[in-house]
Amino acid sequence: MNRKRVIILLIVVAIGFCGLFFYFSNDKAEYVPYKEFYGYVEKGDVASAQIGENEVWFYLKGEETKYRTDNPELNTFKEFLLLNEVEVKAEEGVDEILVSITDIIFNVLFFGIIIFALYKLRGFISTFKVIRHNKTRFSDVAGMHELKKEMMQAVDILKHPEEYAAKGIRQLNGIMLEGNPGNGKTLFARALAGEADVNFIATKATDFQSAIMSIGPGKIKALFRKARANKPCIIFIDEFDGIGEKRNYSGTGIDKENNRLITAMLNELDGFTRQSGVMVIAATNNYKALDEALVRAGRFDKKYTVPYPDFNTRLELIDIYTKNKKIGADLSIKDLSASFEGLSCSQIETLLNEAAMVASGDGRVEIKESDIIAAVRRTSNVSLPKGVIKKA
Image (cartoon, rainbow, N blue to C red; front, side, top):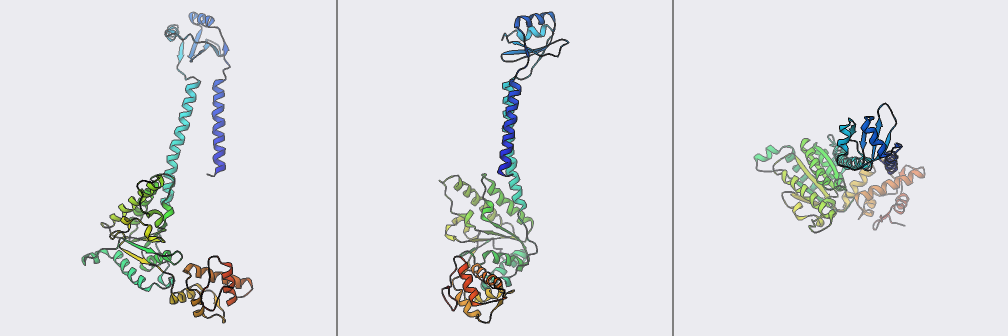
């Protein structure tokens, strides 16, 4: 529901509230002096009466006209009416009706907030997409050969826990990937799940943050519950420092909510020491900011640094990112790799894509040296400090 609809709904509620107020407060009954009313009662001519705070409304037998008179405010008044066979109605006055309406509105808003929170939580749970047939492979990831080898062994333990348990080897509960952004941490985790043919759930720290207290820890529990229901499964949490920062016990409400997130994560990670089939891979750009209790051995058993790509890795990246592109004869792949020193994987991919766009704009298919230089000019935060290709 957008802001415009909310404003319209509030205006309608306000108009309805005012309408009810004026409806109940606008009394159209015909006034009769109390002495005359008293005589009607004694004669038995009054069919029914409603006693209000300051007035009494009544109907005469055989008539549909509504009358009103003053309330004598006597303790014996109601008894007097009943003894004269007057039907006394126990209807609420205007103030009581308005109070009831206010209570109804408050209850609707209160329970509406609760239902909305549950709906948002349910909506988040439904967004936990379990990727069952992941097509990403290690061939899509350049370099990191030693890391690939170690991680494949970790996943083999995940898939065959009984065999390794017989050897006294338990599975890794968590693996931490650290390094500068754009160097393939997310892609590596996805490729690992695809290479090992296990289920994969990808999330990020912002998925667990909520304006409503305690919703975040509930999301964490729901995530791990879903992973256990689909094991063997790898959970990947990107930007992990967004929920795993060191706890501050004397901070604001935000700090306290962050503490609850960490506590919920600790409980789930500790649970993996008793259950097999689920492994957590977390990625962070700021490992030092993480809570010590969260990253200790037994929770995150291994930590790997994903560096900027080296020369050979950059050669692989160029080959991967130009699979459907054509490099011109004036460009040396080795010189291009040397020129890309210091760039992240994502920067190299962006630069080559931009160069292909420049070439296409000129009606060409082949990427020339001039296209690379133009792409550098058009791409922010990218420079080529070394090699034949230089930023003009």
